[in-house]
Image (cartoon, rainbow, N blue to C red; front, top):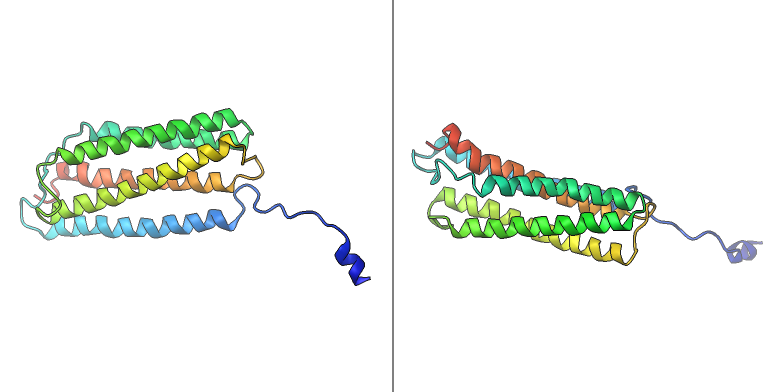
Length: 203
């Protein structure tokens, strides 16, 4: 009897359906831990602004060009990525490919503009505490952008090979969640280093 039950073929396991899986929550926990790291760095900036002597902030009036347009570009890429993810959910592979490909291009442009902005700074990472924090925070964010671009490239390739479906798409949801995190973190970084100096921080 037991042998007959073991020999009887059963349905194959489906695995995670939609976002219901440990992989998605694993990425969510990664995002939470990385968010804590950026929180520590930004807290250091605000703490030193409150305790450092006048003139600590080396850019009391940061240039909004190209920083602001670059920020809007990165934030817009989140909506494009979400649009592409919805393409997978609806079984529209062409829409997903356009969404992931366009997001990759937008992220690459953001990274290029950021590198150009670094090259134009009148200070280096070792000039003072402000410079060190600026390059550490923006450099760490750039590292996350690069990882996000690799993820987007993988999602584009896997989508082109038809690996995903409305039922099997947890890798897409997890990857796009990571990209949203990269964009949201930059919003806080931009507010801290580009906007707060106009409010008198560090002066």
